[in-house]
Length: 174
Image 1 (cartoon, helix red, strand yellow):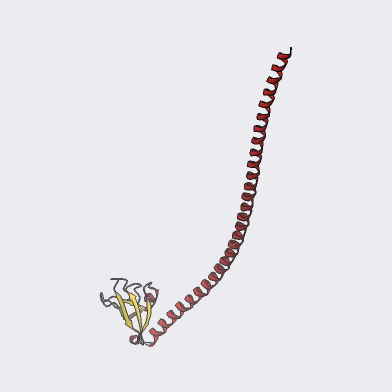
Image 2 (cartoon, rainbow, N blue to C red):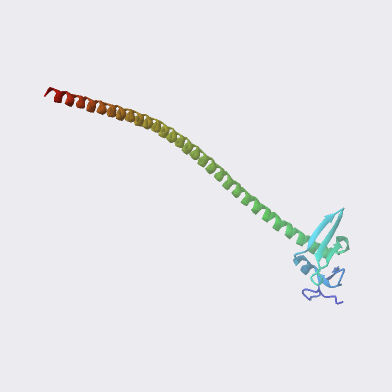
């Protein structure tokens, strides 16, 4: 086992960051850059949690075991992470406000479209009613025309009958 950082190979190793499984040692700077590195608070204990870059074993180290200089580095890293998270939170809050404004605009547009749709439905109902009225009137006109045709046909029959009678009468007289 060497006492140099497994990742960057400099002399700033931290004995408290020795892997529990493979016994490789990393420095605080490299530990703070690990994606898996977390600070955990539970049951009045603060721990540094990270995955060993060599064997991928999860490690948890008590914060009390670190010296003052190491604690300052850990504190600085935690503070930077908090500030970045806070900035991201403010950015996301502004984005959420923009999205809420867009939602209100879409809701208002939806209300307008629904109103226009109701107006169109009302106009459509009016057109259907007028069409039904015109169909009724057309049916009445068709029935009246049929009656007139029937009357005309009957009159035509009567005319031909009368004409035939007149012709017979003329033949008899002549």
